[in-house]
Length: 102
Image 1 (cartoon, rainbow, N blue to C red):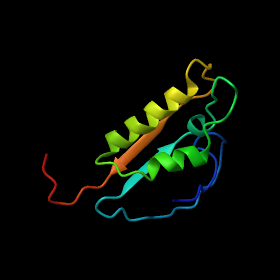
Image 2: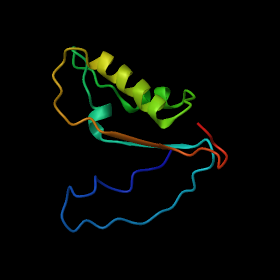
Image 3: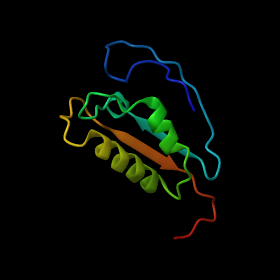
């Protein structure tokens, strides 16, 4: 789990960000998401939460696509008919071994 280094890029003019690096090992997945994911509300107004998202991310996934589909399905089932009030954006990258073949 990486820590946030500041607000979303482009939100505030002239914002300075530190540069950090992390190496993805074979089998690692990097996922980024907007607060619209964790702040999404159920019909009774309860938030989806970081905890609920982490529980989904800790389950093994064979690919970035599979992981995103799992989160998306769970998230939209949770939202159900509640109005969406914020963007919901996710990006995932999965590192396969160098010998991966489809």
